Image 1 (cartoon, rainbow, N blue to C red):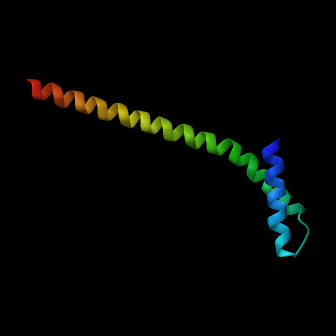
Image 2: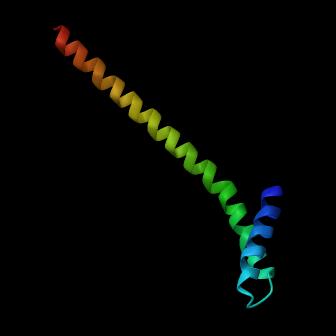
Image 3: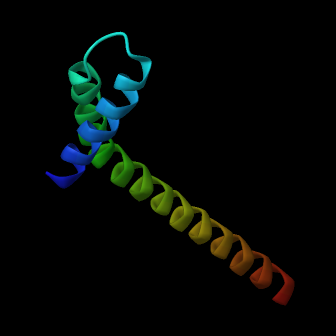
Length: 72
């Protein structure tokens, strides 16, 4: 709830700087953006960590197979 409130406050402040209309629509956009980011950022972080782990496993297997070939 805190991120939604902060997003609404920031969105409202940014929208009110233009002076064209009220800050309500900017607050709604800010709140929605905050909620989307609460889901998207952890998903992107999890994907990146998973990709790095798989890349590391692949590199490890390649090095082990090269070492085994060199030993023969």
